[in-house]
Amino acid sequence: MGAPRLAYRSHAAVAMLAGGILAAFTACAGKGGLARAPSPSPLPARTRASELRAVEAFASIADRAMRSKALFLEASRVMLHPRCANCHPADDSPRQGDDGALHDPPVVRGEDDRGVTAMRCSACHQEANLELARVPGAREWRLAPKGMAWVGRSPASICAQVKDPARNGGRSLAKIVDHAAHDPLVAWGWAPGHGRTPAPGDQERFGALVAAWVETGAACPDGERGEPKR
Image (cartoon, rainbow, N blue to C red):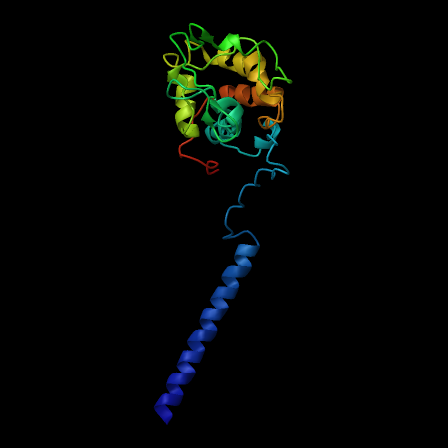
């Protein structure tokens, strides 16, 4: 029985020593000696799905490129909303409704993205919503060019399109900001009429997000979805 008792005492001594080391390590970490770097404060939670975060909400992201990516991801919530994406199809048929159904009656984009003879967009879509007829309308009603198709695309893919003058209609980044902040057709997304769900936020906040994205280097998100790591 002497040897087992000795072994037990040895194991107990080792356990006590390990416990002491762990306690010392924990105390040291608590005092800052070996503590992990504090994680960055998270972005404020949205209280409503229709909310769009303000530019100031991203100030806690110290890395400029990461902040730029996060700003674009927030702005892309507007771009991927049905009020915007329905007019950015990859084919010749506009979409409608929150479920992206094919336009009814059937129409096609035509050579200038405004329909074909006798079925021009302007034949039904006027410069303002026709509430009694339930027909949406805004100035310059048209489809986006195929090069700017957003339906089914990721924020990273859309970001690359927006930055590419060969696909964005020859616009510079400054013109992209102006388009987002002031274009009347873009503005329609927040006043769609007849019970249609508006895009998140408002045009002023959307334009500010796009402007801040450009000012921070116009970096594109890495992943297919979600917020970038900070």
